[in-house]
Image (cartoon, rainbow, N blue to C red; front, side):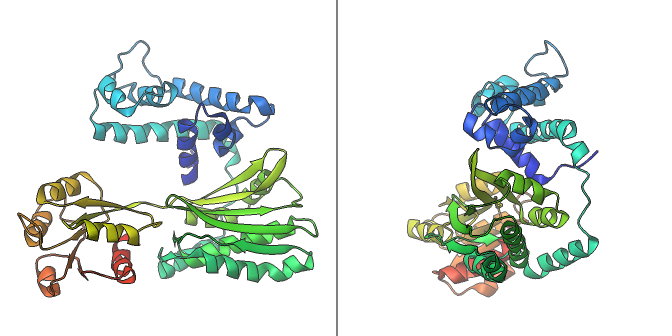
Length: 397
């Protein structure tokens, strides 16, 4: 049994969410593969019918009650995506807690992904693996560089500079449209640089003389977006991406970066490639009764793959920490009712929270005391943005 790549499951999830949205469906890579060979106007319907058929094949008991355990995964997909019912209604119909639902929902996505992969991809998925020397080098680079945040602008400019000579030999122009927003990528910088140089190099070779290649950098939510546009490409951009997928080095680099690539533009006039980096969202809890401090930290984390949760008292601070997977907790000391030291001891003495990193953030100079009571770090209040992010990177990569 061939293991499907990580981005296949994400594309499958996206397909289910947009099952009845024609424009988004025809742009989905899995739907495009399922409908390959179908006439243009029928592709969305063909892909939809294949997905509906696969969901129906997950039904193990006919005429069973909705609460049947054997049909649980089938019923989750049926109610959520086929009938488009809201989650709170599904919980009641299937007699599931919210936690059970999300656990079983993930299993359902994995199951439908496996069914469609085995039916439509497995035979074509036997391309040669990347050379072991490349894998070893990438392993080394990722250990050395780690996934530290960086602005991709300078890296993209250096990639353009590295490929400018071969572009000029063909009379091609290369340019970058920089983002007005602050953008941060959380991947291994040298791996990203080699990946982008590879793409530019292949685009230059596949573009007729006198063409142009433009790179645009922007953010959509917390996901950095890189658009590569151009003209005079010999194949279509979809064809260009298909050819890239046969390159073992490209596939290995793409996997390391967790990046989704799609052809963009109109069907008969390809316009470019969109690279979207779906970054892991780090949930951070700040326990502080000062709204200004919370607002300050939210500004510090803008456009970074982080979600800031807040609590102003012990009850909320404990409840959120026990119910939410957190990257770390930022804990003030001077709080109403119980102070930060007491809350810290509660965190470190309970099995559900004892392993969550807790960073004391206070105007008081008590770094040694914080460490002695089990705190994992200390931030002097108010920190600068650079100081704040430097401490957080120890826990968020």
